[in-house]
Length: 219
Image (cartoon, rainbow, N blue to C red; front, side, top):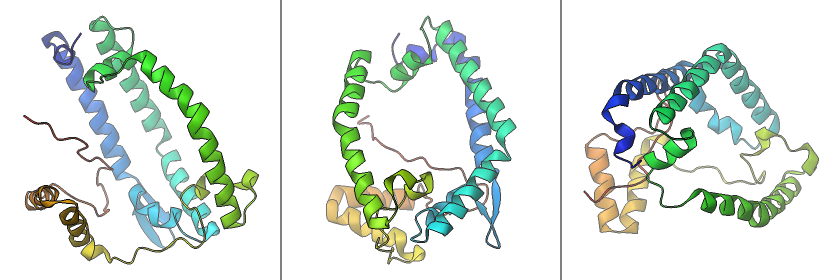
């Protein structure tokens, strides 16, 4: 199976159905509106509170987010169940063992399953000890016992974390300056992205979360 064969004609309808499930998920996540401190906010708007220096504020924001997702639990569970079954169906129709194999082909990965196993072993051996040290430093910086660090503490490393000095309305201009400093080609690319209105960084109700272009093909 090659990257081209993952879109073979016999499974076009199955792929289209998979795409509908993905879009339903994006729409559902974008539609979640959560009451918090006198406002009604989308999920993406909580980052400013999840990185707050005030731990109580972080905790309240985390709980509000969790409750917002809890309110959509049944719809999310059904979507994930449908998507898993659909992707497994596509994989089996292509003669593959499971969706893990299909996803590797779709992403045109140049490494093997054995390479992935080696990476995971190395992460356990080399990366996790570094993470442990970072957590220990964070607990000291925040004045919180390491055993008492909770998920809502993950977004902060110190209570002296500098605040963003750029106003939201000037953000794109500042990002453009960064790209200009990287080089002429990078600066030109960012200007093109802006001209074509292919960048949308501000949160609003019903906005799809995330996604950026992480590679640019030569063709």
